[in-house]
Image 1: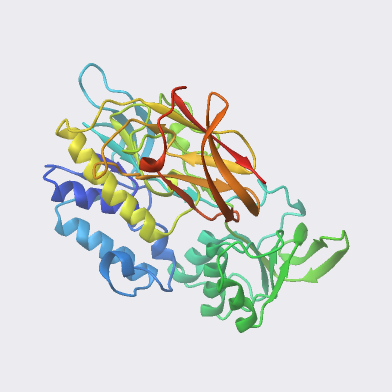
Image 2: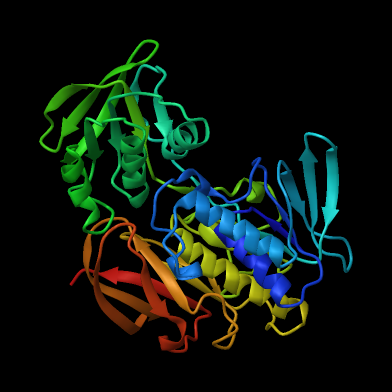
Length: 409
């Protein structure tokens, strides 16, 4: 059994697989150290769900690694998985891997779990104009420089975004003696839940909502940014750096050009409620599935996926396939899982269908069958809030698919 990715989801799944009696569990990660994103986050809260202790990110990552090692999990770092292919005959998937020492190789496994997480959307992907000076960083790059390399990349940056990770970037700045001049949010309110929006005020940082970052200026280093307000007025703020936060996208490079189906709505793989991909010998878990959940959520999902894989190895999961789950369009962004195979409660990884919306909404989530409304749920939500609908609460459909839409009435 091979797990690709040594973050919270991957390590939790690997630990659970060993606890379920799977003989050999190998975790591969391309980084020099296992632990995933939390090892960059030198602040709390981590670990309450998993270990009933309030921990910083690095302490949490170390605890995950120690727990996995104590369970008998083998962890290999500096291993890049270049491709995943279906096995021949009755054999499981094949992985093309490379390491700095041994070079290229192939690993065969009965089952594979992909838990490669997410990455932040870059400046180029956000189409931010201006020049290309140094000092423009993602949250991950900032935290790596501050906490791993002990560097101070700038003194007075602006922080773009108000997701949870944006406030993590803000805390990282303050810990390093960096004083951000502004936090910029294109939407009309903060994306992260209250009371996160109080933090900038407590730290003396201006929170500018309804404001777009138009251009970044500077030659060798950032010197200023141009902002545009909701009414179209532009202004310039002097700054020496920009932290481009959030806008997460699944790290699904392995699925590009592979035999595995990919969901264009999430950017990650298509899975059923057991975490199985279109090749039922390949599973997926964690933030690879959707952007973005907390480390604790990913840990729980990884643990449940490990249990499902152990059941699959014992021949106890239902046949792959089933009813498709689709969304009819905006404001619904995606639904996860994308297939319902019809498993029993207690065996499933995902007991709910999870939805996200692309704007602040109030109305009804509606399920139709051959164009006829058969179920609805009234709700209010904002972008990046999880909407959970229990699978067992849904009526039987005859069309072979669950089609969800939105009614603003």
